[in-house]
Image 1 (cartoon, rainbow, N blue to C red):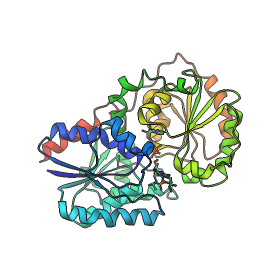
Image 2 (image 1 turned 90 degrees about the vertical axis):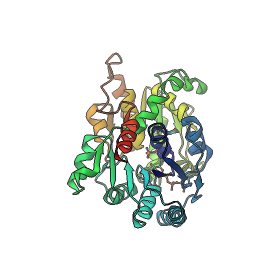
Image 3 (image 1 turned 180 degrees about the horizontal axis):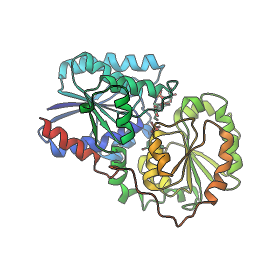
Length: 360
Ligand code: UD1
Ligand code: UDP
């Protein structure tokens, strides 16, 4: 079986690493090719994930870089098509919900090549989010849908996607975290910034709805206030860095730093007193780690994290950041963390590889 994996962004690398490894183990005779679209390209957004997660170097680099949605999507399609024509895989695997995902799925399906979508079925029911469009389109045209939660199965059913296409396999992003526990747990990366484990608020913000307008500066103002009560560490995504560009006033206890490597970030996350984010993946990781998470968005495509009790949806309202110190002060630190959702157990990729191996 010849499989082409198409990856392009930071969360894609985390989701795909365990699957590529599991397929090599379970189907050693298969031929796996890795295509990096180049949607993310800074070393701290790309290369470091290949190194730390042990993903083989890409076989093809499309180097699409940044651009408008249409430019990025079109460049992936134009550059991927000849490669798929020449290599004619039996399956193209696409993860997540980024522009590279939908572009690769569209390209493959029009060449009559089956597509498998990893992390299918998530819905925020907010079509102003670019990712929501990418999810809907990718799920509709994929032949195999690997889902990580029961709510995702329901979303697919509501859209009329035949049940036999969807497979509840678990969460490969959690597989990556579990696989690296022995390496990130002892790191205590926070000490590099002079911070004590459990004492600080870790922040990541990168969604256009928040960072591409004035809300970003309201969020920074609220973080300045919170930092008088607890130190704030904010590894800044490049989109956000470009928007801040020296325009924000920072107090002494609000630390803006480069994006963290994956191991370093997991260490910061697991040792945080709380996390403030608009990331999809970080809502999941904090749920697994049992770290209180506050999501600065109006909705989430991951309601399972809210039901679990680890994640609080603050709304798209930076003023609510001010509530975080009081909320976490009211939590019982000795309360045991909740059980992770079903099949968030470190074995998802192995389940997928087992199913694929049986199907050939
Ligand atoms: C993309 C995904 C988003 C995902 C996020 C993960 C889409 C529509 N968005 O958002 O769903 O949550 O990745 O991080 O696919 N930039 C750099 N260096 C890089 C990459 C980006 O400087 O290596 C800067 C550029 O100025 C670029 C901007 O960040 O214009 C945004 O990058 P882009 O890939 O378009 O979207 P993200 O915001 O990263
Ligand atoms: N991450 C990281 N360094 C950082 C921020 C995030 O390694 O500075 C990891 C995080 O642990 C998770 C993934 O990147 O595995 C989430 O990516 P991101 O928030 O960019 O995308 P999203 O999940 O929102 O699509």
